[in-house]
Amino acid sequence: MSFFGNASGNNSKSKNREKYKELTLAIKQIVLERSKNRCQNCSKKLSGSTQPQFYYVNGSKKDNRPENLRALCSECYEDRSPKHKNNLFSSIKKILSRN
View (cartoon, rainbow, N blue to C red):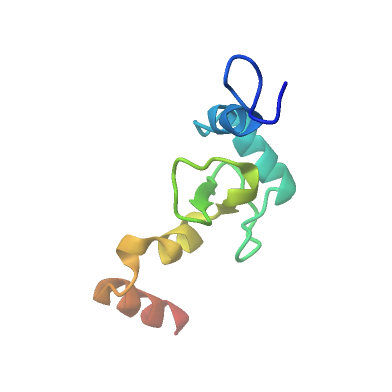
């Protein structure tokens, strides 16, 4: 191995990219274990009835590293989802649910 990578031209960064190319069950399990099977926003227990949703911190769905993922309940995931931000219906729903 040299300063420019190994003889085949691959370096550790490209191996990392390949390793985290897809969101696998093993990666999901790592994120859930780190969060102790709770939503990382509201601490709701994630179980059979409350399926975890995985939120990408940096916004890139190609970056499946565990440190870029957060386990959220469906309510918190919807609140963070860009398609729901600045949505009038979503805002009204939040206001009505607080009363």
